[in-house]
Image 1 (cartoon, rainbow, N blue to C red):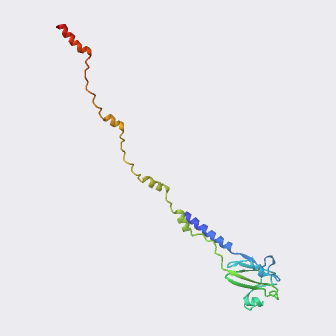
Image 2: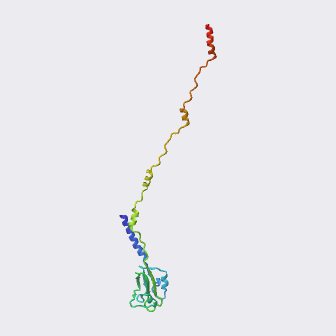
Image 3: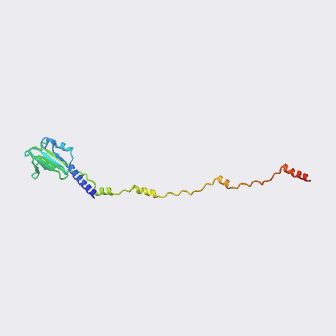
Length: 206
């Protein structure tokens, strides 16, 4: 909640400062001020005027004036009876709408001597406005998936069962378990001595 309030405060502050920064004050004629024999068309050529900007006309008070006229009166340097007139010597005019604006001096032949200004006022520049704080809050407060959950899924996935183990049968085991052939039957050998011994004994007893 505190985070959301802080973001809203920052957004409002940024919007206020950005709006102030967009508005500009133009001193007509710069250091030359509002005077005769000055090319105000060239002065305005490289400038961008927008709604919310101001024009400041500087000239000796009560010796000159600033009159807003229409395009026809601008060309003719004529002053309508209903025209708006400023004569303070330091006139600040706020540009409240878009379109062309014509200003002339109504004193003597000042207008015909070049003391006239025409500008084109553009719509206000789109001030930077941050995204609403609730969106920022949602982004900041949305939980991200914990890496542990992914690891748990991997750990809990059963691995494939190994192939059943089979005992190897070796040739040597077969040889050991195979009964050996029975040995040939034993036969007693009769030595020559055994053969004639009975004969001699027989002869002795006879």
